[in-house]
Image 1: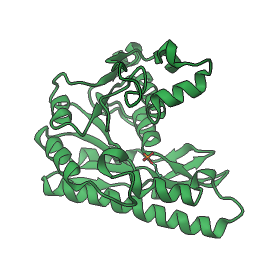
Image 2: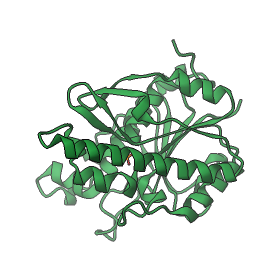
Image 3: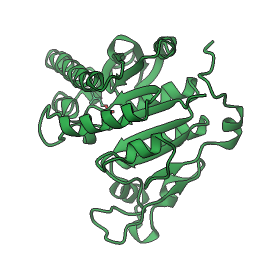
Image 4: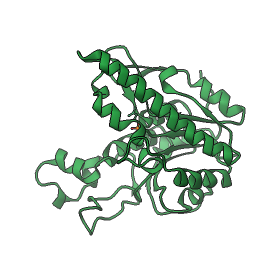
Length: 286
Ligand code: IP8
């Protein structure tokens, strides 16, 4: 039976985060060739990078609808357009590599309440998978019952999809080798954590000397953007799927992992009880 993957191409890998709407075509082209080489079967998620985060911050979209709403609504429309554009750019590259991506925008499929997904018809993903396509969804701005709208990140989509589907493996393709015990950009002796158990407390991963008495601040500083990712990864692992955080800027690493080889990465081991229950094929959705 073919292995079923859930892969997120992070915004920092597929875009230049310092410039608005800067697409890293060469990197995406290489990653697409790696997916194609491995004949990847599964679902893809694209992060927003500089196609989403810069304007989302400008228009304060993470706060939902506030008083200056007309400007915000315009901002919402721009960000939705931009993240869709990025997703289609990725799909274009995938098509060139003979893959069959189908773009599925959360703005048209997802409803949230206070930032949590309350409705998403995942049978659409299943049916597109069964057709032999690669469903490709992404971080987006979606409707929210309490806040008008909210940001639905690619990580949140990863969590929701893997809560219902049973994937064999989830991969976060990032711009670092994995999770470190200290900030590798600041601390020269920072060590890559190769394996994390599903019930690990994130603050226990941080080295004692980095805590400075303020655990919360320290763990944010240390793991940076990785903190949120790790939370998502632990949740996905708790649903019974092994999760890998890998560096997509290193040639061949994604391909090797998709082909079942051992690579430099952080692996978050799935909850054994859940893994035992897991079927090899997509679970029947009721
Ligand atoms: O890059 C964020 O998605 P992410 C989506 O997966 C927007 O965190 C609209 C900023």
